Image 1 (tube, rainbow, N blue to C red):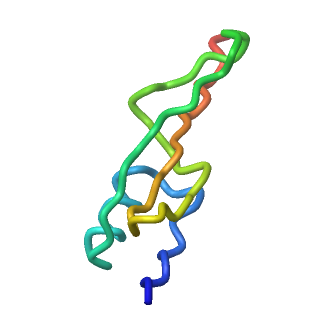
Image 2: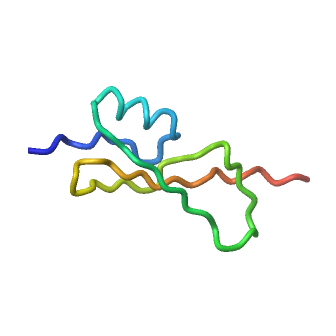
Length: 72
């Protein structure tokens, strides 16, 4: 029986990792990026946008960078 994956969707990466570590769940990450540079992003501020359970029990986190504020 596999363990339930904690609710980590839309959380900052560091917070999601801490929750998974506490739950004893292994994880991997992948980063998704926009196809165009219309909106600037902050690659130092990653959020979980997708959570998938792999066949081996590893949780795969898809991460996206937060959109930066517009400079006026």
